[in-house]
Amino acid sequence: MTLIESLPLPLLFIALILPCLLLGIGGAWLVKNLGWQANAADKDAIVLTHAFAGMLYAVALGLMVINVQSSYSEVKMVVMQEANLTENLFIDASGLEGASGTDIQALARNYAEDVIGEWESIGRRNDSSLPSHESVENLTLRILNYQPLSARDQIIYAEVLSGLNDMLDQRRECLHLGRNSMGAVAWLIVILGAVITIGMTWFYPTESDRTRYLLVGTMGLMFGLMIFLIVVMDHPLLGGFRVESASFEEALLDMQAWQQSFSEI
Image (cartoon, rainbow, N blue to C red; front, side, top):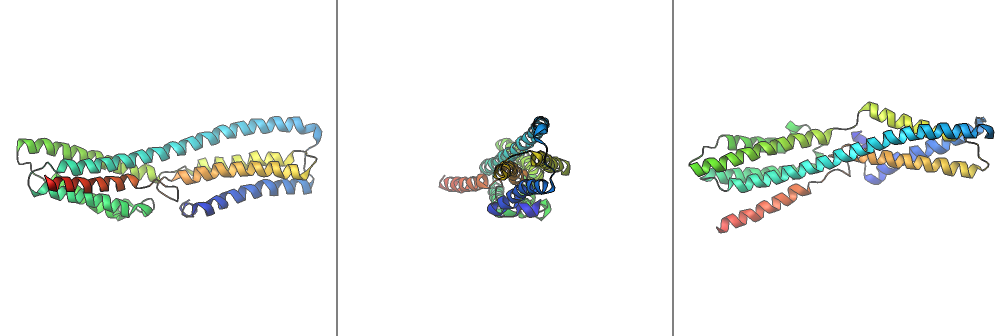
């Protein structure tokens, strides 16, 4: 799915909507020309069967849409929490004695800058190949090697260490959830369900071909819209609808403002 999601949103929309429209209209045209349309006497049975299948598929599709929307919102929240924890780490480090506090602040700021710089490719690259991987390693080692110089320093260091652990947890969760997606079985259900639900309308007897193609095309369009929604939200860190790095950008601006305040004290 990475190739599909790398398309610009307008092209992705067309690439997903058009096959659904062609499936509906083309199938209806084929069934009509082959003479496979049902008799008017069988219309009630077809309507009942179609309603039953459509209801089951609507429930399954709705659950999938809700699932990808929830995952997308969760990744967005995790990114915001990670950015906030990075900023808190920067602020807390200002209370450490000696030059080490300044070093930790600089490393925290570098980490935020690297995350922002790599954001467009973060969903396609391994964690170890990301610039932020080295940044967060340097930050972690610098904090772990710090030696508190006083009782006050020990209290602040404990907060810094706790904040680092929380930030690392959020980073791992962000990368895991952001790269996670629906499995092959789920996509098989989406595609086969759409084919079955749309396909049953091909056999409906109608007096007007225009009415037939309009109704079947409308159903294809609706299925295409639902599939488009699932695709753009399925990988929260990929594509034109990915979660943005705005939280880290805001945190970096706050760090710069805090740095100026610290220098004036």
